[in-house]
Image (cartoon, rainbow, N blue to C red; front, side):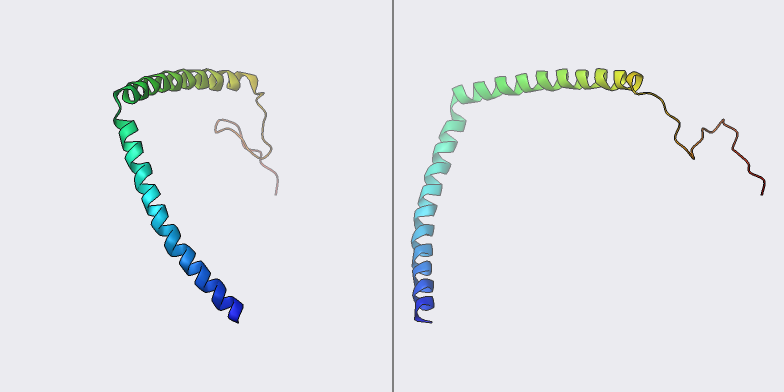
Length: 95
């Protein structure tokens, strides 16, 4: 029981000290990230990356369309048992 109380007290003290140090470090990181994001060189690089990303997305979209159209030709058409097309005569069994 005594060990449990000591552990809980240590955990509480560690939590309080950790949150204070954690908050200060968080504020430092937030300030640094804001400075970096506002840097004109970083903004220019981000704009170029967005443009390249758009180009790659367009190329990928085109390639996907090509692959989808050729996939239809490559996949053999198989009749699924129990299914028929609308213009097929249904099979009638005497009953």
